[in-house]
Picture 1 (cartoon, rainbow, N blue to C red):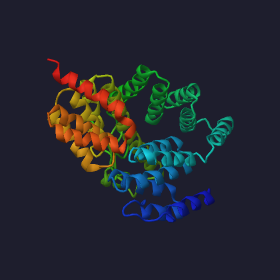
Picture 2 (cartoon, helix red, strand yellow; picture 1 turned 120 degrees about the vertical axis):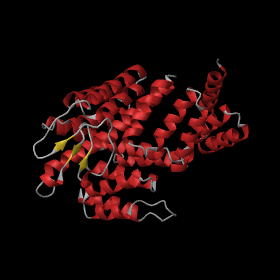
Picture 3 (tube, one colour; picture 1 turned 90 degrees about the vertical axis):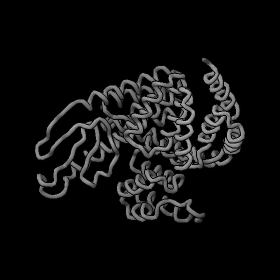
Picture 4 (cartoon, rainbow, N blue to C red; picture 1 turned 60 degrees about the vertical axis):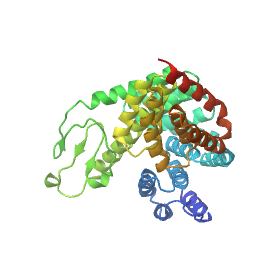
Length: 372
């Protein structure tokens, strides 16, 4: 592990500086010291604030892989890919292979050995299922991810993976049902009130991602640690609980956003809007959520609202190709033909293979607009 850390550190330090396209120096320093968890916390903040997203997502993916969080590594690399043009995607996909040490089979063997040795933990099964999914073994992926969900019914990450596996296996309805089931359980949990000795617990209707170190925990039940009733800093167990709830908060937001996207693709626009707004209540800084809400609003003929949302998404990150497709559709529906043509040209310049999907969405949007 020590040599692996030094290799990743040297890889990023050796990269040429090109303006802002460099990862967090603070995270690199922590990585050099071997403090992987601290490096991830720093990178979480960098990504949340949309700073140097491509490089910081790549670095965070590498660090997550070193901690055994292969599913998190996959998610970070996939998100990083969305910022690159088609020509650059091939290089980025090669980097995805490097995260798997150029040999996903070796990681699968490691995970098989760990499970055989008695390390039967939901994260191990979830990681193995995710790697199987990206290796094309959908049956094995679904089996492992089901085991992970069964071991921990509150493990949002496994539900997201299971939903993705069903979707890649061309079972969209099952993919939707998995996320609906998790989120129904999550929302039911928000209604519960509990109390813990030495702490005061309150229930929140939403989760707001905050830094655990500030003494406020947000999760299924928002826990406020009262300084007047605490003697000293939080214990390691309490810190672990904070981190777990913080992680669940972020993944629950992602589950809402993924479900909203599938509703929108199924032309269930009201459900898509209501669902994506739940994601935004958890994390109002997620620019992908603004894009998803814009698409839902186009389906509901709220074109001005859609335009406002997608402009915010583009302002937060102008590198994502599909944002321009969405804005072009909103402009087209408002008869702003020149602006729409400019946006469509930008989209196709960034993503030349998107022409067929663009034409399909244009035809659908026009049909919705012109239907009385």
